[in-house]
Image (cartoon, rainbow, N blue to C red; front, side, top):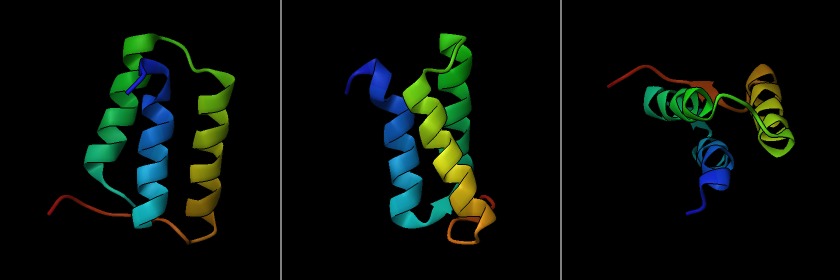
Length: 64
């Protein structure tokens, strides 16, 4: 997987499962911290994820 597609892939994973798990959230945060910036495409993906969460279509779940 290309390094530039990691955040988008993680957002797609959350959208597919309709859940934002702590693992996915931690991986997204790690990638953002590692890179030190956010691309326009990643920003749009994260905006979509937040909109879906606000609409109640994606659930934030706790660790098992």
